[in-house]
Image (tube, rainbow, N blue to C red; front, side, top):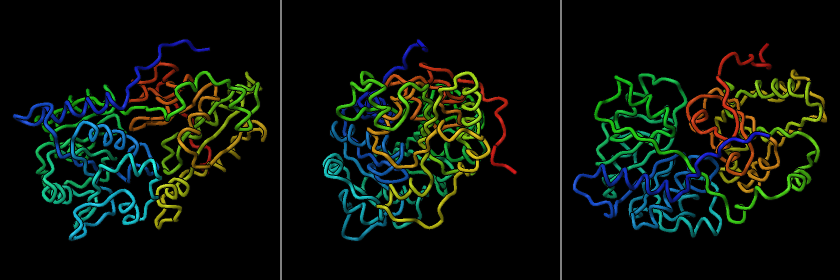
Length: 395
């Protein structure tokens, strides 16, 4: 059994304090207690599926509780003349997204959802929304390849909460980052890499603000729940050595390294015949349906052929289970808690929330020593990303 130090627990209140500090320090002449009009920009609505939406949701509720005025600019929301902003349910209907439940309607009642006349993810659209609503600061959390710096940002304070996926910055990423006044990297190693890049604007203020884990109500005692009880719930052998892979499958590039997970598990079974692999891997269709009210979108991105990989790995049928359901967050945490180890050998991650979640609830993680995964794997092992086996499904 691994006995390593646990990672520091960042709460959503600490996250809020860190961002408030950035906003206050960046606003010339403003006291730290001054209220800001803050525009949050992410890939969806705060209750829809995805870690970026979840993290911005934590930030929205925390800033609103401190008296700041919160605005949320989701993709697909158009500006409606005569309606300066929408409530949570109205925003969901306007964008075709999943509607909030009663609790989320209450949590985000103070957030104003706003739209643009321009194209999504363009700096010109952010400027338009900021002018219309008198925005003091904008915080963007999304992958950098979708942000188009077609004009300079004119918001006084602009923070890119940046999920980095690469060991060095490419030219387009440098241009996108340099459009902001601040970059909040998700890991210390990413912050150092960005700050050391000579081609990034020297005026850019680079800081480190990670993502956080906030356990749902009733789950703080989850580490004390017997694993046998959780395994019975998920239909997993009580006496097995259980390996869990918890991931989305939405990229053909195999960034999540599912082939490495399967080959590592096959090798483990040679020395631990009782080992059992639980794959909680949700494909693109399930993920996007969860954010779009169950509707099937057009232009669906494709993930890797996991069924073909399983076939080529030649694992005994009783040695694994593949669960492709979109589960409630609390249920995902129970699933991870039942495991002896979380396996996540991704080639790269913007942050890697499952790694932090697993360690918080007492399940060690085996990850790749890259970026945030390497920085925050404290209860487990981070392995150098060298010599990974090739894709099983190829050829």
